[in-house]
Structure formats: structure tokens, C-alpha cells
Image (cartoon, rainbow, N blue to C red):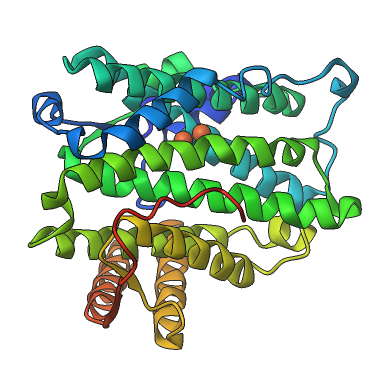
Length: 358
Ligand SMILES: [Fe+2]
Ligand SMILES: [Fe+2]
């Protein structure tokens, strides 16, 4: 939904970027709110020692001084070939929206819960995400734009999710964030000549923050095993597939960005999703069978349908509307058939705690 007044749109580049970040489509990062009383009832007593260790890591704040653009990097880094410029800008805006979405949600939880331990945890996580978003904004300035984070927080539409859905979705997005950042970092580390922007140099330490955030949700979910059993298994399957398919579709719209990094979106997504899936064994009772080529065929089908819907949105008239509906229906059917595919039970011990070693 575009809530910006039209007179801002074409005149102020700051607001054009904010406008992009404000968009709510199926694929764009969203802002969430939740039931804070229900959240307050979650327990962490079963995993006290893990919790304490994690809190000590947050308190130590190893990345405190990491997110600063250094003085010797103040030149303009936005001079990129045209297609790459657009896709990289889209990547930065989508990333800042995700980071800030986390920041707003965590800050809100910190403010509204009574449990002092949750207040502490969500305070630390809001701190980290605010740094991440602010850091991206420092580089966006080269493009002559910036995202107005305060405006975004006030105007973007919020989606209500029950706490358990927040946990499934946010756990996955933190772990995917970790996997995405570390995979890109490893690519540019091995091939410094393809590092077309310095921001990638920050990804190694950055991804450790995201990994730690994911750990916090893993500890909360494992301390409340009801979240991982019974009917909730169906929800977990839904979130795994929805988050994975969304990433696949979104990444495949950035062809030149991936080309510049010397990876195909499919190859990159395979690696990121396999890593995320492996990590998620620490908490979820099963994983999606990513070795089954049919799963990838269905992701691809969803991508084609999504592209077709985007094309149709450019056309006016009733026929286009009907075709959009028809393609939306086909996407729904494809997702259901994806959902019905067998998953792989997870046999690893539930108390497994992974370390970021990849
Ligand atoms: Fe972050
Ligand atoms: Fe995070």
C-alpha cells in the first residue's frame, strides 16, 4: 500500500526510497506486531544455562564498533552499470526494510512485555537491528537517497502474528539472513576482484549477529516444546515453505546482481536454503527435502507465475484482472502441492546447539 502523498514521490529522492520500502506485496519484507501478553507467558526455565550463555554474548556486544563507515571509504560507491545499479539498490532497500522491520518489532516487544528477561533479550536484538539498518542507510546516501526510518515505522502497514508465528517466521529469517550474508562474504573473500561494493566486507561479522538472534528464538521455542509438536508441525511446514519459496522468487528477480557476484540465483539459493535447513534441525522436527528436484521445480513454477502476475499488473482492463486471478489460483495450487510433498524427519538430538562455523 502506498501511503505517500503523490507530490513527494517524484521530487524527493529520500522519499522515493522510503516509498519502495513502504510497499507491501507478497514478496516484500513486512512489519509485524503480536500478542504481548501471550508472549509474556512463554517460559525459558528448561534451558536456563543456554539462555544465560546467550545473554552474556549479547551483553559482551562483540560488534559494538563494527557498523561504521570508515573515513577512507567516503567516496561515492554507487557508480555501477545500469542494470546492476537498480538491482543492487533494490537489494539494499529490501535489506534495510527487513533489518528495520526486526528493529521495530523487537523494540515494541521490549516496551510491551513484563518479563524482564524478554525485555533484556529484545532490547539487545533491537539494538543490533537498528545498527544494521543505520549502516545500510550510510551507504544508500551515495545513491542520493536514504530511507526515512522514522516515517517508515509510523506509516508502514503492520501485520498481526501470534507469538508462535513470529517465532517460526523470525527464526527462519534470522537464520536465512545469516546464511545469505556468510555465503556472499565467502564468495567475495575468495574472489576480491568481483567485490563491486565495500558493504560485503562487513557481512562476516554482521552474520554472527543474525545467527545469535536466531539462537534466541531457538532457545525460546525449545523451552516451550508445544510450539514444535502436534498441530504446530503443520504450521512449521507452512512457514518453511513460504519463507523458502519467497526467497527463491525474490532472488530470481535480481539476475545481474547475482551475475556480478559470479553465482546463479538458483545455485546461491540452493546453498543458502540447504545451510538454513541444516541449521533448523536444531529446533524443527523435520526439514524440507531439498534434494528432491520436484521441490525446486515447484519453486520455479511459483516464480514463473509470480512474474506473470507482475507483468499483468502493468496492463489495465478486466481481462488482465481475470488473468491475475487465474495465475494467483495456479500459484495457490502449486503451493498446496508443494506442501503435500514428504518432509524428512529430523533425528538429531533436540539439545543440539550449532555454532556459526560455516
Ligand atoms: Fe540484522
Ligand atoms: Fe537479526
